[in-house]
Amino acid sequence: MLFISACTTEAWYEGVRTGAENECRNQPGSAAAECLSRLNKKTYQEYEKERLGAK
Image (cartoon, rainbow, N blue to C red; front, side, top):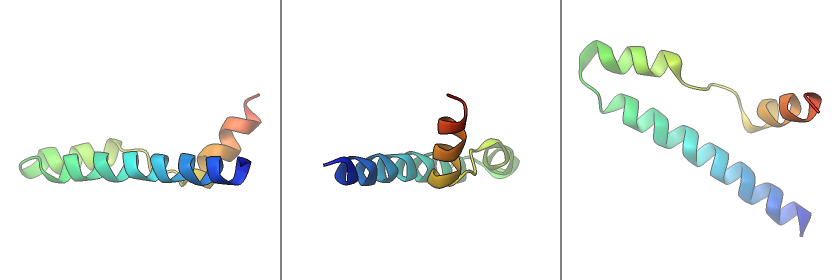
């Protein structure tokens, strides 16, 4: 069951990242580039490693 939960969490994480990127790309001109530069670029594995290291 833990494996299924991890896959679901990873899919959710990647979905949120993709959604945010799409929102940025829908903005006009230089606003899109600025928005993209502020996005979280960490993979789920990088995020999870950092999160677990903070405990």
